[in-house]
Image 1 (tube, helix red, strand yellow):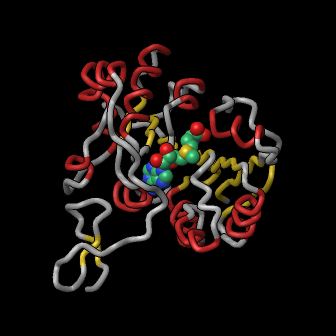
Image 2 (spheres, rainbow, N blue to C red; image 1 turned 90 degrees about the vertical axis):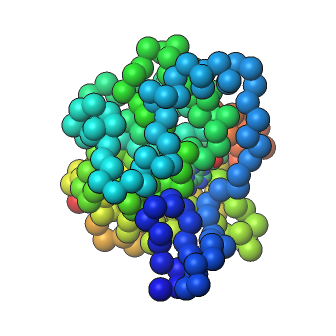
Amino acid sequence: MPGSVDPARPGVRLTEDGRPLREVVSYTRRGGRFSPAQERAWAEYAEAWVVPEDEVSRPGFDWASRFGRAAPLLVEIGSGVGETLAAVPRPELNVLGIEVWKPGVADTLRRLAKAGIDNVRMCSVDAVWLLEHTVAPGALAELWTFFPDPWHKARHHKRRLISPAFAALVANRLAPGGVWRLATDWADYAEQMVEVLDAEAALHGGVVERWGERPLTKFERRGEAAGRTITDLAYARA
Ligand SMILES: C[S@@+](CC[C@H](N)C(=O)[O-])C[C@H]1O[C@@H](n2cnc3c(N)ncnc32)[C@H](O)[C@@H]1O
C-alpha cells in the first residue's frame, strides 16, 4: 500500500515498490556533533536512559519493562536540552522525553543526573511515530509540547506538529482526565492550536495562565526578547 508504515523502521514510510517516501515531519535533523561534556554524559548514561530506535520498533516492545515498573506515562515532545524534564521531577510517573536532536538528549542526560532524577527515559525517534506505535490508547497521563518548532512561513505550516490528525492521536492516547500542556511564542501558532484543539471533541480546555512549574528556556527568552507574546494552553481529555 503506498505510504504504508514499515513497522520495523520508525519514521520511514515506503512507497509501493519499497522506496522510502519523502515525509512531512515537524523537525529538521540539526547538527549532531557532541561537545566533550555531551560525549561524557552520553558515555555514562545513554545505555541506561536512552531507548534506541531498534528497540522501540521491535514487536512487543513496551514502556513498562523499559522503565522497570508499570506507572502512568508523562511524555514531553521536543524536550530540547532537558530543562523542563530536570526542573519538574515527577517521581510517581514513568517520564519519556522525545527529542530527535541528539546533542540535546546528551545535555538532558547530564541535567537529569545532576538533579538526581532516574525515572526519565529518552528516545530520538519521531514523536508522532512513537505515540502512534508504542503508546497504548489511554496510557498517557500527561503530555507536554513547549515551544514546538513554529514553521512560521506559510509554505511550511504543513510541518507544524499541532494538526487535527495529531490532536486526534493525542486525544486517543490520553487517559480520561489526562492533561496536554502547550506553550508557544508565535501568536498565529497559538491561534491554530486553539482552533485545532477546540475542534477535537474529546479535549476540553483553552488558553491558561503561564504554567508556574515551567522553567524559562532559551526559546521563551528569545521570543520575549523579540517582543512576542507567550501563550500557554492546557487541554484535558474528557
Ligand atoms: C523549538 S525547540 C523547543 C525545545 C524545548 N521544548 C524548549 O522549550 O526549550 C523544539 C524541539 O522539538 C524537537 N522536535 C520537533 N519535532 C519533533 C518530533 N516530531 N519528534 C521529536 N522531536 C521533535 C526539535 O528537535 C527541537 O529540539
